[in-house]
Each structure stands twice: as structure tokens, then as C-alpha cells.
Length: 302
Ligand SMILES: [Zn+2]
Image (cartoon, rainbow, N blue to C red):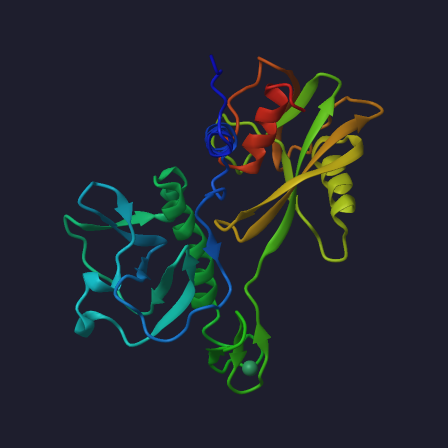
């Protein structure tokens, strides 16, 4: 009798399934994709998403099946919509537009959701679409006027940028690169409590890259400053955009070099220690790169 042999498509589905259940960071929305390039301009069409922003919240709707989605143009009558809108990006084949100076009252169907809650929303591609839109909308709202001469900015047609109508200074969206670093000492990982993260939670170390610094120099400086350690064998893992703070997190696995005695800075870091597998304290969830890197240690893959 012929044995069951999975087809290529079954294998692919298994890979996708496993990938998503065990290693899905919040930005990993495959097979969905955000196409950030300025591919669509002009009129909004009926099926396009319209993003309405109020007090760090975005308007969502619940469809007939109870699933969360963004409002579409067809949900509004043309006379209600504002005249000023900005193309943000496409999610798959659907264009997303930000509507300026426009709010809509909540109803059974439509409600505002704080952007911080989007990290736990389902479906994940809608959550991530909102989070990326949040960073772009905040950038547009914060750059209505030129920082050099104070005149009004306008959208550049050929790239994602704003240009001053008067002095022609160009502004690009601001992204702040930051390192995120997991440190290992033989079979233990360093986890720290930073005063900026939720009460009781530990994570790996992170810090912004300074002007004139390489990524490697940032890692060495931050680790020394925060926990007083030297590190070696810097290995790049992956990166994760983090639009809540406009950051790009660049993940590295490293090993301690020399004396492994931790000396915390007592400013940002309240507590840090070495932890063995199976004894990790409450830590970042795997929707963030920090959580995923901690899970790779815990599972023995790193
Ligand atoms: Zn100007």
C-alpha cells in the first residue's frame, strides 16, 4: 500500500502554520503584505480603506461576521467625507487613505480603538495595518509646517516626503534605529527590568543608536552602560519595525566576554540577572522581537 506522502502544498501549509503559531511577530502577516511605495494616487474608490484618527485611536468597524476591519469609502456618503486626504499605502490590493480633520461618532458598527490595543487585535494583518498607519499619520500631523522657516509643507509627488512651499526643505518620515540584544553566559540568558516596561516584566537590553555610531559600537556601549558587561561574538538575528515609537529594532545575539558579574546602572535598569531555561521570569511576548529572541533561548534553539 502506498504511504501517505504530503504534497508540496501541504508541506508549505505546514511551514506557514508552524511559523505563525510559534514564531509570529506582530509584523509577520504573511501571506498579507503592506506595499508602502506610493503606487496609488488620486481618487478614493468604494472598497478602499479610510483611516480616521482621533486621540491616538483609529476608527474600526465590525463586519457581519463580527470580524474587525477598517471602514471603507462605501460606508460613508460622499458629502460627509472631508476634501483633504492622503494616500498611505496598500494592504494587499486595498489602498488605505488618511482623512484629514475628520471624526465620526461611534455607533454599534463603528468604534475607536487606542493604538496600544492594536497589538492584541485580530486579524493580525488589520492590526499591523493600523499600527503602521499610526506612525505615518503622526508624522504627517507633526510636519504640517516646515521646521526651518515655518511655512506650510506639501506632499511630494514622487516619493514619501514633505516639501516646504517656501524654502523647499524636504522632510522624510523619521525612523529611529535601535539595537535589541540578547546576552548569553554559557547556558544562562541575561534578563533585565527596565523602568519603562510594564511592572513585573523582564526583557533583553535595548538602546537607540547615537549619531556617528555603528550598530556594533551601540551594542558594546549600551551593554556596558546598562549592566557593566563586555560582550563578544555579535551575531545578527533579524529586525523589526516598531511604529509605536517610530523605531527599527535591530536584533543581535551576543555572548558575555570575561567577568560575568552584572553591575546595573540603577537609572534605566532596576534589576538584571542570569536565568537558566525553565526559570525565566515574566517576559516580553513573542509578538515583539525581544520576546521571540527570549523564546529561542528558552527552546534551546539559541
Ligand atoms: Zn521652509
